[in-house]
Amino acid sequence: MKLFVLILITSLRFLQINSSASSQTFNVLDYGAVGDGNTEDTQAFLDAWKAACKSSNSKTSPIMLVPGGKSFLLQPFTLDGHDCKSTKTNIISIVIDGELIAPKDRWAWKYEGKECRQWILLKHMKGLVVKGSGSINAQGNSWWDLCTNEEKVCTRRPTSLILEDSDKVHIKNLAFKDSPQMHMAIESSKYVYIKNLYIEAPGDSPNTDGIHIQRSKKVSISRSSIRTGDDCISIGDGSYRINISKIACGPGHGISIGSLGKHGDHETVEFVHVKDVTFTDTTNGFRIKTWQTSAVKISNVSYNRISGTSRSKIAVNLVCSETKPCRNILMKDIKLESIIQDEEEKEDITSSLCENVVDGHKIGSVIPNVPCLKKMN
Image (cartoon, rainbow, N blue to C red):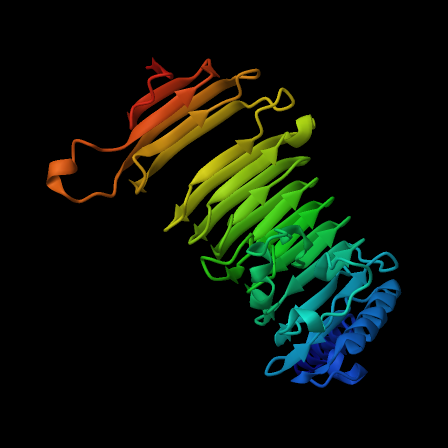
């Protein structure tokens, strides 16, 4: 019996040694980062990533670690996963427990060319986990006045983080703050899973979308709080099978598809599912934005079990294209009442606007009434 116990303990120790050996940690401090919030640490991040990426070729699960309790000043940089070899059992991770900060003054940003597209770019990732208890603070308020000058150059402001041309990426448990423009963009990627993010910018900050999706498929966003000056989540052309759930949205502009069809371009968005979302102090709830062209056709859209209050008298706005009417629109169990509390104005509750809708139906109670939809049992 004693011999059996001895063998068991020895085996456990052996397993522990193997487990620790299967993962390697590449701490940015070991590559020269200071983390005092004043010294630029960009090169240390690039070197730590290069080492972690190279290590993934040796059947390990490397971790690029940004330790807590420190602030890392970073210029625009790119982490390229082209040469990393993540597999189902050996996945490379970036653990951000500290604070990442961009230069506070926009004139201090260093980038090539006339425009700075993003602060952080992750591209060519084939299996990646980005997580931690830290924050990504772009300190973007010095950029926001670009939207108020005569040139209206909002499009020249950088996005905090772009994920591009990537596959099987998980991003979770991080905080994003004060991006110059969008906080995160998912572009030309698939199988992207985003969970437990906290994204915040002032309600009057221009074009600071929380998460934007473009030319991507099979993207899931869940259990996140998004408070910005624009769309909490926006979905652009080429997006397919997007699932959004358990989001606290607001302030901001709500959740949007589009705009689509500008300059008559043919653009598509398909299979978007939104559920369990709370909108608070948003200018809209869920909306689909298109230009009045023949390039975009809206069809097969259902709104189910939506309730709340509206500051606008028109709580339901279905204004579709004259050349391509909306088709097969379904509303079921909708209750959007006026936020007005004055009893004398209770009769003047919410109303709807409906134009160019074909084959629209409603089931159950729909408040306000949408007369262009046919009643179904």
